[in-house]
Image 1: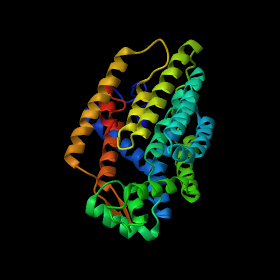
Image 2 (image 1 turned 135 degrees about the vertical axis):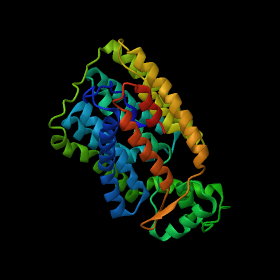
Image 3 (image 1 turned 120 degrees about the vertical axis):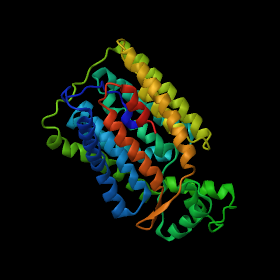
Image 4 (image 1 turned 90 degrees about the vertical axis):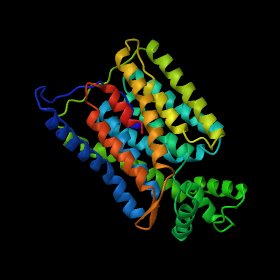
Length: 349
């Protein structure tokens, strides 16, 4: 979802280029970009053999947008801030009040930065930190891998619950009490070793685009930040802060609901700052997102519950990862299409 930050569509390809050649070129670029996005995550996963290494992918996307809309210096600052906030978001998620407060602080900052035209460069920070706040990917103890894999194979469910069950007094018995599960999940959120690695995952993911930007973007003209007046920034700041803080509180209060992070991302993506709103693009953005939700519902019904496959001895939902990457590639292909709504339909899943 983070990729859905609005960028006015444009294209540099010749208008007379045949459609098959155009699609082939865009697909090659999209595949190359996706592979580049995956490198930090794959390297960190091989080193740690932890599913939470996938947070590096989120960090990479944050770093790319920070550089695109703020430059290298803003990108470097964002990487550090993201890494510092990541463990705080996991701990803050233990309470609806602290979670809502931290989300409010992050979105207040985004709103304030809109005065300098830097809200796009920072908007993905609260978007992607909503996921570890509401449902953190757990640290998988080596001694519990076999139990976790057996639980996932037998009954499916989430990796977090399987890890908690494996570490409970029930010894992996699905009938373990809710109190034991809650205690095990809470201990995970306070584990300094786990929190330190999460901070590192986000930082490494975010700093890689910053380091590569001078090399890869030498011939690319990046858009200059567009400052907004106080009268434009204030309603924008109030809107995103109130909506995301209330949503964070509600979804932390109702942990069984799984769409909280997506809802927060949607609010930040669709909210706009300024009085000169491009209504055509706004309508396409809204309708495309709704279409993407419908597409996601269809895909989910076809795929069913997550199935896990052992990779380097670690259970991962490869089917979901594969579908996510496929939609990501297709969305990048559609990014500079004149039919802007197609991008949002594809990027939402």
